[in-house]
Image 1 (cartoon, rainbow, N blue to C red):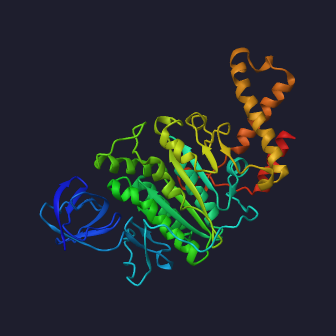
Image 2 (tube, rainbow, N blue to C red; image 1 turned 90 degrees about the vertical axis):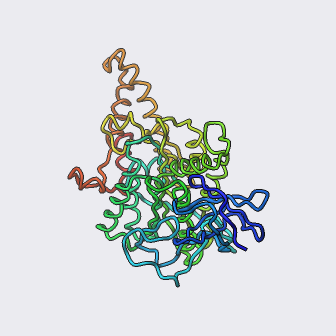
Image 3 (cartoon, rainbow, N blue to C red; image 1 turned 90 degrees about the horizontal axis):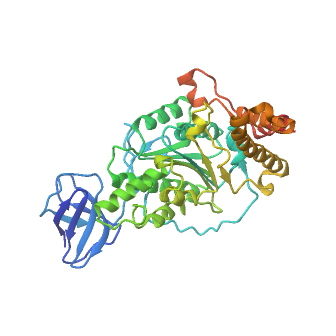
Length: 433
């Protein structure tokens, strides 16, 4: 039997079923001219199904009938999605031809059950060509890197540079999930990929900030579903880029508010921990293939202690922190080296030479920060010869880590730079040894 819409409040639609109630995460279809799809969030006593109006269709009114679809939100997966831009519900956004109905589709909310278990192998380092990243936060296949920073410090530029440098190697397939970011940034990324002939190895999913919170909260899961298919069915290695993970939390928080859920301490949705885990746990590797992810994390009010930022950061193997203080000095990328961390910077992964060098560099840069305060009071000439030498070395290191980006060439006219890890290590050894 069909259900009946009993109330409509913003994006929340309540449908009553006297019999054959739907399951949570199932789509039900309103019997109107547009066949509006609603996503069931939970069931209440009396056969009430609380649903989200996915497309914010205002043509749903009280008294309309709704029928079960016996399926969840499904997006196309496979080769037909390469080079395309898709929405959270799998619809093309690039003005291209519709994706064939014969293309395999998968439920974005169902967990992949793989028969293959992951076996640890020797870590494989991928070169980004960006000195400060390759040295302090090695990009290891299957790892997760977070690019953390406030507004306007270069998170998206750094992500686009990594896509340009790593994806053009053609070693795997790239996925990009645009979660609640500006339309302009999505357009610039698409043009950049197209001009560099990288669309042939890239799948894009977008739900920008103009979309409703339901679509913004689902877009990451849609992109992950596509990545899982290539990893498990075609045994490919995936490079997964997400911009911005904090917007994912914001979207979930908006949905939680609409559902009248009591917020957790800090003002976020009560399910913030499980929301983060449900997405991050799917960005994993197994014997079929790997998913290596780079995720930008917006920091509200430049507060690194924000609960959402902390939850996401704890899921990362490396955290690259971009600082407004560094950016104001004209240093690009504006990486705050003293708070950037990586659990992958070990002798077993990067080798003894790289590790020992990193320890020396970090010691010099920490000393540089303490000497700056002293110099501000008594002047550099009052330092001991050894301190002056270390201060000078640290200044050279900071200059050495400054680098021009390929993706900024069309804006500033300065050619981009790419450095191999060996070139990076040699340039640092020339300064500190």
